[in-house]
Image 1: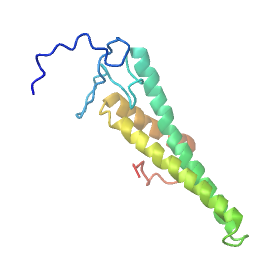
Image 2: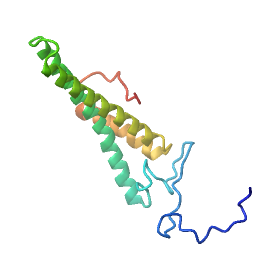
Image 3: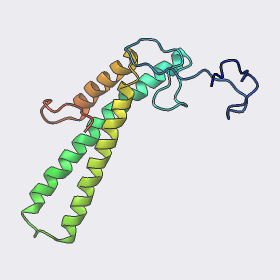
Image 4: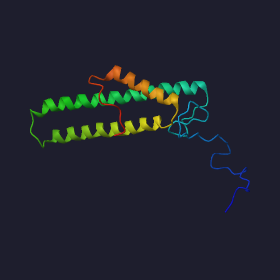
Length: 152
């Protein structure tokens, strides 16, 4: 059925009558920021200032991923040292496993979120992710750079 002839101009569409432009969904690399929404419809780039603030936020978020990874590694190293002093199957052992699982879950969620940022296919956002990885590694990492950020 062809609905091309119908006039939808008076329909509210659930946004209180305000007509914001649709978020642009790019499947090809672009530098265009017009109607760019980042992950959420509410995270919309509508000015140069909002672009700059968003890029700085993305740098901080991506750097934070390295902080979480480093905190997880340090926790694991501490527990390995303590494991020789206690018996397997203790309540401490369960607590340790729960904390490790929580670190793991946060890292998985975080890495997928970063992937969604990158999948805007916007060059500015992609560069902000790379800069955030650089800043995070310089600020927090204490190990080799051979492990890269991965979705999972």
